[in-house]
Length: 302
Image (cartoon, rainbow, N blue to C red; front, side, top):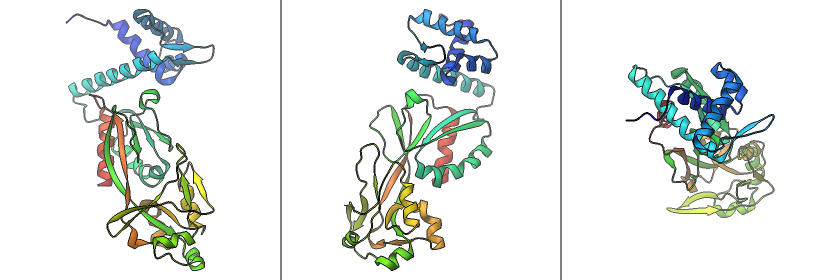
């Protein structure tokens, strides 16, 4: 096999990846213990070799070009494979290390994922967690995420979708609200109640409430004086303060139900759920830190 890369070129690739990850030649130089000029020369060496521009440079900032971003993702994966191969050869393959970037929606973050993370880091202290809490769908290739947790999986053949759990839905209200307005006994009764609504920010579409009646699945789009978008947890806060009825995940209101601050209604029409899924790129090599995190989450929800 003929050599394709010499030591200088491999070093240039490492410095290029550092600059791409940190968004700065100066920061990359500080992390690598070299001068910014050395980083700049390394990037120029790669650009000359391939005949493409990897970065757009201004006096204050650098950013990857489209070609540079694609090259960065491939190089970062290749370097990660080399690191894992070295650990395997030296008997360190059971020690996940490095930064793990995870995107998670607000509901799952606050009531599932974030409370679990100290336990994960106690098991794997060499893994640094970079958690993006947002309901916005992220771009894995452009933003460098390792994993995302989402209810709806995008139509992207480059992603693996692994089912995590089915989250049960319940309709809740405060005892004071029900004493004032009455307790709904049928789905038709919802028309006489203040039903707190939520609109999807991506489409503006009203999220229907899901029920089951005599084995038939039913969707109900209610109405009322409160319509929320962006953060669905706002609906839970309104319900806790007696604003009306709200359908949410049971895991969010479990403590409220135990303490009696909220009660469930329309239980006879319950039993519906929405799925939470793990999404990650379809790569031949999945870093050990990612595999360990997936195994941990699956264990927690089992």
